[in-house]
Every structure is written in structure tokens, then in C-alpha cells.
Image (spheres, rainbow, N blue to C red):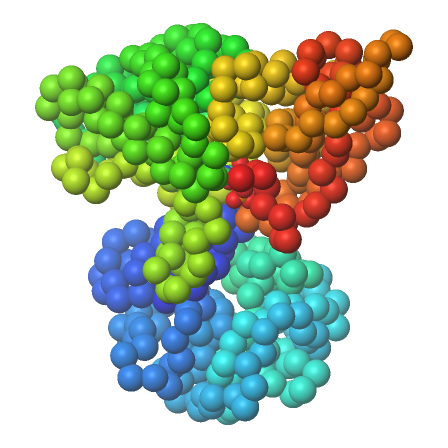
Length: 508
Ligand code: XMP
């Protein structure tokens, strides 16, 4: 077990993830925990994360000195390294320029294990305003940048180590090797932990937290809410009551398919078919933000009405993942609202339920792996993300039954062909968009005047940035031919070749 002390870095969770990938268990604790609390966990080592503050500032995180004196291997990253240096008697200065992005370091080979199997010159990811001016006594520099800044240090006995850069970030070429050196050659971890253990721990923790209470959960058919529900149901069985609100804005036959999977998973689910109400509420609404607002508000009303029927529920389960946590952490700092995302999790604060978020430390691919371990059906585990407002934001302009019908047929063909070509799992998201545009075409000897359908497919690792997907031409060709032949009302198909940024993933 490794304890990570969080000093507020955006990357703290990423450190934990990298450690999980190396099959070592880790736990994140706030920077101000006591040495006793840490000792209780009998860790094999300690990592001090980076953070947004400067060690020179009043009020910056100050870790209890006795923590550093514990007889434990320690690795300080960025802020963590500066903190260690300062606490051990070195000098930290505020640099004249902030260093942010790629940099190159030169490793000083002194035979210490921390840089084992790392080439003398390699690329790292820096993000700092301060740097270490002079090292504490009894410590040595282990690497430096091209500008002579101290990039790494260690104590003579090798117990205390620090990196000025971020080994947890993918841009640090040998970051994984460096972390694994710390875990296996400095801390002497065994490396036999796996996600199965995470499940056992999580189930235990959910049981402890929830006690005998009831939990309610909004299911969307997506990976996150489904895996969260499967996990909690493993812990507390029928005391989890799920509610699936069918907004009528799902893909062709998706609501039925999803309900079938939930039954197979033995989840306790109420299916609320509210499609008529949603259609009615959306009548004549064309503005994207208005659509989201209408759907979000109605969703909350329907969900509240349904959940109030569940007597004495105390908890609301949400499938929040770590990237959602980071994103919401950024909100309120003057960030512009690009889209007001609506989630099935986006429920009002005044529901007087406590929130349960068992997946908040995980990334999407970990949630998928977890889903597979706890037997969530593959069609849910590998399903592409789908926005809460569903087809309403893929049917541009006003929403009618006729347009939804056209969109569903075309979208089905598109996804069927993607699956047939074996490309579904190479793509993060693929969907059709029905445009409010008519163009002229020719079918047989006749002129047609019909709608344009746009296809979008992207690759991404978290939906925050995305690349448009390069289809083989023949696949696009098959899709376009089938859609024009089989979907009445469409005579032209176009493919979206815009990445994010500048475009967003959804068209509205
Ligand atoms: P955008 O369009 O903002 O999408 O680039 C990024 C990711 O978020 C999904 N998305 C949503 N998800 N509620 C959701 O739950 C929403 O309102 C919503 N809008 C977009 C989108 O499908 C992509 O995966």
C-alpha cells in the first residue's frame, strides 16, 4: 500500500491510477493527515503530490514534519519535492518564468535505483512556478533540466526522493519506469494488487457507509450509472432501487434493450415511460440550450415524483467519474458555459438525500474493466457515451415524431455498419445528426428534395478533446448508400471532419 498525500494537484488521481496500473494499492489522503493516521495503514511508501500553491506562500499546505521523519520511503512530485526540500533545510525560489509543458532532463547516474532503465536524456512534463535553488544537506541532485534547474534529488540513503516534473503524465516519456522504480526498488512493493481487490474493498465500504438504509439511483443505460448500480447492488442487494426514466429521446429500441440487460443483471428497476411528456414539452423548441433546459427540468420532476414513492430512501447513487470531478472543480472559476450538460446524475441539491459516488476515483476505461469483473453485460460495458438529452440534440431544429423516426432509422444503419466493419470499439462515439436542411437529389428519373443527414465519429480519451475518426472509404460508402436507399426522407449524407476543439462532439 502506498499513501498519496494530496496537496491539490489536478494530477493526484492520475498518480493513483498509474500506481494501480503497476498493480500496487494506493490510497489518497488529504495533506494534513497526522503521522498516526498514516501509520495505521502501514504503507510501504509515501508520495506527496503537486499542487497549485507555492511553498513560499502563507497558508500553502504544510505537511506534519513528523510525517517526513517516519521511517518510510518518500517521493515528492513538483510541489511535493519543493516542500520536502524546504522542510529539510534547502532553499526554494520563485522562478522568473513559469515552466509549463515539455522539457528535457539529464539524469546524473549515481547508481541509485530511481532512474534505473531511464536513458540519460529524456523528455518530461513540467508545470511549476517555483524551483529548488539549493538542496538540503545530506541530499544529492539526481537530474537537471537543460537550463540547469534541479529536476530530481534524493537523500544519500535513497529514502527521500523528489521530481520537479510529473512522472504520472503521459508526456513524461519514462514516467512509468520512474514510478515503478520507486515502488519496486525503493519501497519494495509486491505488485500483486488488482481491480478485483478494488471491488472487494468498494463493496465493503459501501456496506459500511450505507448501513441498513435504502439507496435510489437513476439509470440511463450508459456505462457509468449501470456499473455503479451493479456495484452497489452487489453490496446491498434489493435495498438499491433503480429508476430508469425513458425520455423517448433514446436510440432505436435502446430503451427496451437496456431494460432487458437490467433484468438480466437482477437490478431492481422501475421503468418510467415519460416519452409523451418529453415530446410535448419540447414542442416547437429549437434553441439548443432551451432544449437542454426543458429536458433537464422535466427529468428532475419525473425522477422526483418516482423516487418519492420509494419510502425512506436516504441515499442517491451517482455514477460520477474522476474526469467529472475534475471538470466540476473548474466550474465557478469564471469558465464559460459551452453547454449546460444534463446528466441523469444532475439532480437538485434540495432532494435531501446523501450522495453516494463509488466510482469517483476511476477513469472510464477502469469503469469498463470493473464492469466486466462484476458481470455487467458487454453491450452496456462497451457502449459509447450518450448525452442525457439524447436525440433531442441530434435532431436539429424542432423535434417531431417524424424527424426522430428518420434519425433513428439512419442512426441504426450507421451503427450496424460500424459494428459489421469491426470498428465499434475503435471509436469513442459515433452518431447521426438530422439537419434542418433540404437539398435536391435524383432517384431513378425523379427529382427529390429531401433532408441531409450528417454522420459524426470521433476518437477521444475523455470526451474533452476529440479527433474525427478516419473511416475506410468503403465503409462510408456502404453507410451512405444504405441510408439513402433505406431511409425515406434523406437524399444526402455528409461526414463531419471537425475535431474538438474547435467543434464540440455534439452538434447542439
Ligand atoms: P460536447 O458536445 O460538449 O460533448 O463536446 C462532450 C461529451 O459529453 C457528451 N454530452 C453530454 N453528456 N449530458 C451528458 O450526459 C449532456 O447534456 C451532454 N452533452 C454532451 C457528448 O456526447 C460527449 O461524449
